[in-house]
Image (cartoon, chains in turn orange, purple):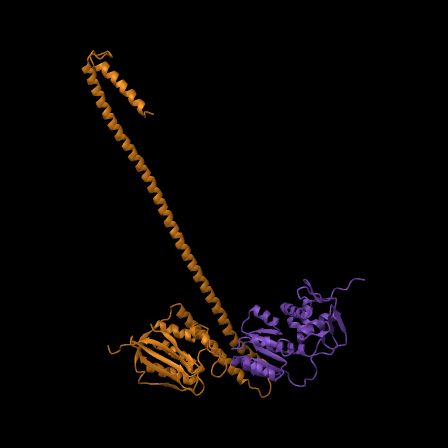
Length: 339
Length: 240
């Protein structure tokens, strides 16, 4: 309202008239009697004007500063908003990525579950078919001279097969759920081999197993039962695939990294090339054994071997496989019993 | 209706193709106890050899065989009248069943099954594969001739090779030419009473017949579908 040049000029004229009227002789009139009074009046008004100009400049600078400050405040608020929006966008992107990852993981879990179900259902059906066929044959009207011993043997054998499958599936579930409990103690490798070989002999009395007791007189830090399971699975595989009359060999050696390396070799036809990369996956089986029949086994043995060995801090590999035979090598930590 | 001949010259030969040793032995024992003559092989290659060497009336074929699987063997049988094939599979998947029937199998049995169920299926395919005397009668429509007396089918004068079940189905339709044959009645008369509700068997075999007999199987003129009721050989007779 009171901005610009004109209010200033008007104030100067009013001031001039008021000072002239009240302070310049003759007081009470608008007359200026001497030149000196005019000069004095001019100086007074000039000083006042100067002070006014200075004050006005200061005020203008103050207003400019206020305007800039308010502008800065606006910019600052914008920046804060932008920053918040960016943080929210980043968080959203992160959540999206996490969700996608979760979805992929869930999809994979679902695929695994459905594969497992298909495999388990497949592997349960054949022994069940045998048990049903054999038992219903026995239930048919009796025929002279038929004692059904074969059917009973089939039923008993298939029930054991189902029991082994259930046991292996439970072990696999423990391994995959990281719930394998190990009672670690120093175990002499030779003792574990001796026990496993005697178990194999009960199943397959004809099969020779060659191993060196002196070489195997080393201790590993292992769970006795689980280590036995590793040997049982590897020896059962070797026995299943080795040609009749050929021995299975077990070798034991120190490794420079302080692990004990154990090899189990057979003289069988070798793992088919297309299966070598997947042989430790569950339900991957070699199709034909040494007797030309189906490979047998639950298809979980090597997956369990890997799970147990890795839980001990070791590793297992298919070291060699070809027409002259197959060697699996696994490692277990050395137990320093002398210390 | 077909029936079993009163006297059997020799027990029917059955080829069992099963790689699982225990199940293979149990199947052989069950078949023997039922008066059949089973031979067992454990691989696809063995099956091919056995099929080339001997004529079997029925083959029990496992799908999951090492190297040469059951599908390959089924493919190799295309065009052969015998043996009638019963698939025994550890996969109970409906798609596998349809695929097996499409590829020429006569029946499909999902594991696990008992000896009674298996033997009933074997008897049913044997019954279907045995020719039964029938009065001479020839039924024709749209280039297709069904000679019921000779038990043969011709398309444009050329004999068409049909499996026993395919022949029984077209013969049943031809006997009632121009009339609608209901789903259940066809299944009971051709396959047997226990198959009355296996409608996909009927669908698959009708499709197999159309491929062999129709000029355009997608626009069938010989075997027409009467929706919700059944199938008919030729068109309906016009009312006088």
